[in-house]
Length: 399
Image 1 (cartoon, one colour):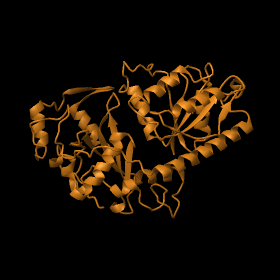
Image 2 (image 1 turned 45 degrees about the vertical axis):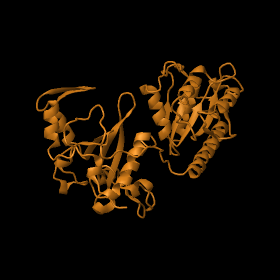
Image 3 (image 1 turned 135 degrees about the horizontal axis):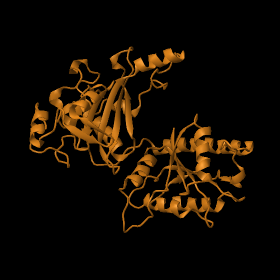
Image 4 (image 1 turned 30 degrees about the vertical axis):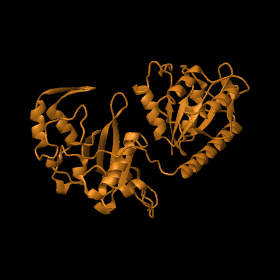
C-alpha cells in the first residue's frame, strides 16, 4: 500500500517531520510511506497562479497516486501553520487531489494538548468544498511534550504510545480498504484519447505522413536532425548522438516512447521484430498508436493512457505469461513528465526479469515459494490492468 505523509511545517527542524520519519521506518512492513515537504511551496495568491509549477504539480501527482494521506500538523496560535494552510489552498484552487482521498491526521506539540485544536481546525478545512477529503473519524493521535518523546535514535520511547500509534495506523489501513471498496476502481473522467494523432503538439513534425514506412528518414530531413558525432547537451551530461544510441541499445529491456499526442516516436532497435518480447518494426516508428494495435485493443490502450495522463497511476504494469514458464515478462507503462510536471507521454519498458531473479536467489540462497505467482506473489485472478493487456506496444492483445 502506498501512502504519502505531508510534513505540516516549513521549519528546518520539525518534530512532526520526525514523527512521520518514525512511522516511515517503524511500519515499513505494512505500507510504503513517502514524505512530502512544503517548505518551498509559494504562499497562496490567486492573482499569481502557481498551480502548474513543478513543486505543486509534484505534490498533486504524488497525492493522486497514493492510496491514502497522513498529515502531521503542529499547532500555531491554536490552529494549523500558515504554510500548511497555503498548501491546502493550492490543492483546492484549480486542482483537487485530496477529493475523496482517505486522510489521517496526526500531530506533535511541545505541550500537553498535542496539537488538538490544530487538528480540529484541519478536519474542518479538509471537509470544505474544493478539498472534500475523507478524513478518518475519531482515532486522534496527539503527541504532547514532544521534546521528551524521542530517544537519541529518533525512536518513540513510550511503549504505550507506540502501541496506540500502531493501532491507529491499522485502523487507517482498514479505512482505506473500505473507501476503496466503496469508490470502486479509479476511472478518470476524460475525453477519449485521440489515438490517430489528428491534432499536433509543439514537437510534432508536420508535413510528414505519420503512416509512412520511412517516417524517420523523412522527419529527420524535414527538421535537419543531428546524427553521428554531433554533441547533445543533456540535463546532466554531454553525449554524441551515437553514444546516446549505444547507451539506449545497451539497456537490458525493450524501450518504447510515445509522446503525449499518442504518436509512436522511438524504440531501441536491437533485434528483429520476431525476436522481441513485444514485436516492433522500424516502419512503425512515427505511427499514431491506433495503427500499432488491432481495433479490439484500442479500448485498453485508451484506458492505460488515461490512467497515466490523469495521474490516477504513475505506472501501469502487466504480467504477460504467454512467453512461457522460462520467462518472467512484465510490460511497464511509465508516465513521463516535463520539468513543469505536465504529462509528456509514455515510457514503455519490457523485460524478462527471470535472469535477475535467478541471480538474486543464487546469491542469497533463497528460493521462490511454491504455489504462488512467482512474479507478484498474488493470486492468479486477473487484474483490471492485466485484462487491458499490452496497451502501447505492437504486441498482440486479446479481450
